[in-house]
Image 1 (cartoon, helix red, strand yellow):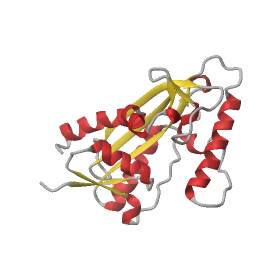
Image 2: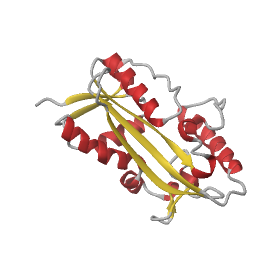
Image 3: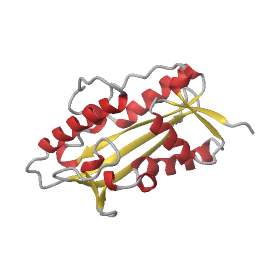
Length: 211
């Protein structure tokens, strides 16, 4: 049986490789939408699931087939779930020149600085990384496969660790006694919010799509 082509509604190379690893031996060919000339979708919604659905539908319609999308971020209890869907640009879009990684580091630093300011004086520092995965057989699929992974932790008062990206240096994981930025890639991929969501999605893909 030929592998089902599944278009990833993202051009993030790290996300593509991570999802390929997590999908493992399933009979799926995961292709980034950029390889097919598909532009990024708008993400106007206030919830992860709505944005993930919008991205998956956009990619499925443009590709004429199955698609998968992820919408993720950090949700801080004391801030009513913020930054949430705007996690990537919490401090606003930072003007920065240079290559992608350099721009990302500038944005990450601004986002982390804002979060620390927002959390000053807060005794409740609970937070979770959240990943919502959605898979569609086609753009009008009435039965999207939906999986949500949550990785709970606490926001530190200052960053720790050199690895990872985004809010990783601020997110302390009590069960691992480390920040996400202090974990190696293997440990992060094993425990992460996206890995937890993918365990659920893999089961759904096998049960419902029979892949």
